[in-house]
Image (cartoon, one colour):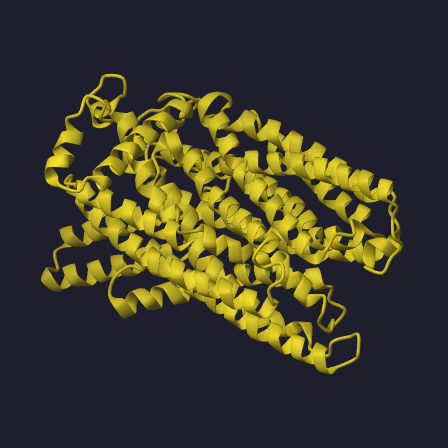
Length: 594
């Protein structure tokens, strides 16, 4: 997913004017002038079409996403303090549980993707998992009200609950969180792809893309969206989609902590529950107008998983081959997976889809470390803010609102100024993987800055007997800003990279795998905070995290080099086994380092 494409119209107009000037210099004939006028007219029509993709159907999906993200980020904003204060858990345990909750929420998208592309279809998958999500939030809210005490909710020095009361409160909370994680994860890979289906189908109907100028059946994804990544409307939709994510996050992170401070955790969790109800209502409001994806057109994703596993095993065999003769013996072995490619069991399209999926995996394998660091802003950085001086009445959790605000401001800035400036400077487009590499670098810098701030806080705590730290909470702004820049460079770009490079039948699967990189990162964070980081000084923890990100960046640069080389060979239809073997070496090296 790329940032807002508002510079597309300007770029098209400038290129058309340049073409007009060049042609007029060569010849002043009226025929050539008419040709240029036709070209300008076509470009203007294309620009008008790209601005017209925001139909009521698309708006309902965007509104649903904004409200759902309000619900998710709303309960998550106060979760680590809820664990520590209301459930009376140790700080490191609260951080680890926060990470595990996020990990489950980002692991469950694979379930939604399998059901959406294999049997249920995206629409029914969204409806069913959203309903489970709503039930989970209702249970979580009930647990927050159970044995609640406003002082205990808002102050760590509140009334201690008995063992039985704590057990009831914790049990209800964890049951609700389980349903919430399964529900929110199940719809994650489907909503974005479902919205893109609507936009691509509309572009096909309007004849905007030359590849879509034939007739199509609205009930199938393949015909409605042969290659949606080439459409400017789809790219713009993803930018609006990401905008809605941050809009929902911004409003919830700002409002929910205020509700918590004034009325306690129960009412704070009630607000996300209400917003999720309206999100589901907004989505259902246009149910009769959606273009529906028919699942299992090219075989179930279960069989696709099996095929990917066979092809992956083949590549591992090739990588382990120590000589050409061994490679040849493996290649012609009766049990070799390569024979699957020659079998009638799989269609050519299925083989192509599986290979495209496997080619993306090495890039995705570089992302978990980024998400391990990124999600600590909702736990570790929130707890850090709770030890600082609150300025302008800001609650510690509300510092998380700065990230979506900066995202909303920086996306058009990067799109209209920074990316074009970089492209003019280097003389070529700023590719996906280069942006993602810079994102990793900015993420590492954010945690080094956070480590320096933590050191200053600890020094003052050691030298000052005052219970209130005099260091303003606003000193977190540099690290938050660096991480917001990293998110734009890596996450926004990552959405577009995954959607653009995945096959039509596996888009929800690839989006789920992209989200699963967050699950892996958060799960790793939970393990570290339950083990290695439990007794480690927090300054050291921040610097270790930054160092891990730099090591990950070095591996990512190697993977990016491999990807670019193999993409060039793929365009020439000369992909060689050496590319496959090299990436297995990269993945093995990453495992050894981590």
